[in-house]
Image (cartoon, rainbow, N blue to C red; front, side, top):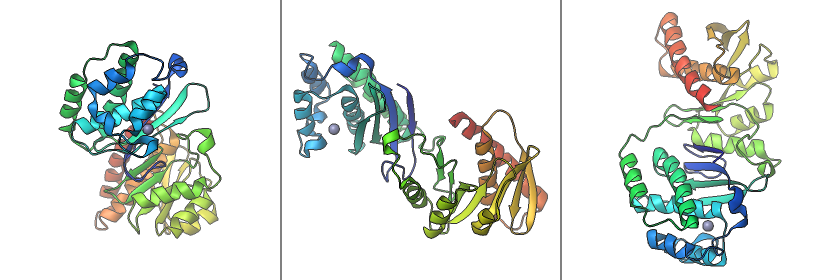
Length: 322
Ligand SMILES: [Zn+2]
């Protein structure tokens, strides 16, 4: 497994939360489900619900046909991850598996109802498929019991991504406009539009999209989508073109984070070494903006403390993220 993460709200792949796993399947690149006698039987015996998966064929039994004809490891992991969730009563069906840039690299995504369940289902599915290929799969009772236990845990996990969207807080952050999580060949020409449309979907109308300075195309698109815009820079180079659309701008001067809002300017914190600067500035701006939206009545000192605290918290999260 190369990486594993979950998205909340709309994302590049779909409008529902998904788990994404990047894999290199190594030796399995040369083995399909049809090459290993007993593979399909043992998998379907342990997880009878797989019979109902439609897959690309579009009818119940479709996936079974794919298995018998021979399909590749990552695609099977996707279906097993969906079925594991189905076995604890989560009604999920959307999944995709695509090859990556290098031989054996795959990106697979599938929807989840519960973020922790989705993430764990990905890892368990990988293990189950490996066991089935090795002829060691008897039952999936233990993984299912584990997911059932996870399902009882809180559904508000830490959120860590390049696009941080807080659906409860009316704010989305575009940390950078390069789609780092997306394989090279998905980086289509209209990616800015696509990026903004998913971000704009995640915040309500009149919500705020925080975008990098000088990403004018993204700023304009966010405005067109009905969002207000705040911008951030990792230096003090914020242009008048940026300021024209932005309700607030955050920048860095001598390692101090400065926020300009209308004709006022606030010093709201300092850059620390432990997290990426862009994440620190964007999170500080998000906290400041949230605070502004939340209450206009606080004293400026109180506001500054609260902002700093919230910023530090968000910054810590963002630091883990990248
Ligand atoms: Zn499929």
